[in-house]
Image 1 (tube, rainbow, N blue to C red):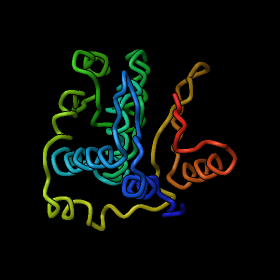
Image 2: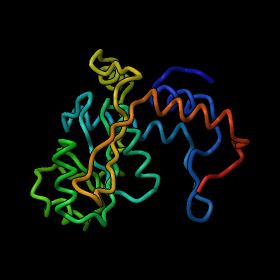
Image 3: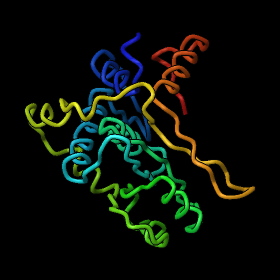
Image 4: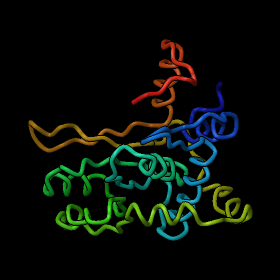
Length: 204
């Protein structure tokens, strides 16, 4: 289904049209696409209105692959930002270089793991996993959502960056690579066309 050249377009249409679970984890735990979208939208609302995230801003995500990671990543995209996944085993000096390059001022992490970010010396607003969960369960009115996401400032293009990854840095300073929405969608559509996966398949 072609709904646009943005990750957020695909996310919204899938949440609207697909009743199947988006995520399965643990012993029978599931999260629907609709719930994933609602939680991500609430967090994006907070990022925009409480944290001042604007189009093109980078936000670091120091969470393991989990429902919370997906909520945070999609929230950053819905806010018009660029998400930057962080391996929490990264040495502080290397992470400091990456954060400075990305010009990050906000990061998600587990409570008790803030040390790695504080050791970098980079000034960051840290959002714990527990705080993330609290934000995403707060009810928001339709008017509040419309006021936030109906803004012209959030109009994205396929050429706008979606996420940031870094080279290994084994031969020098890690270099950041920005991947835009269009490139991600091109890859997604190629994969859909050339794989035999269905809605019943589960990807680890």
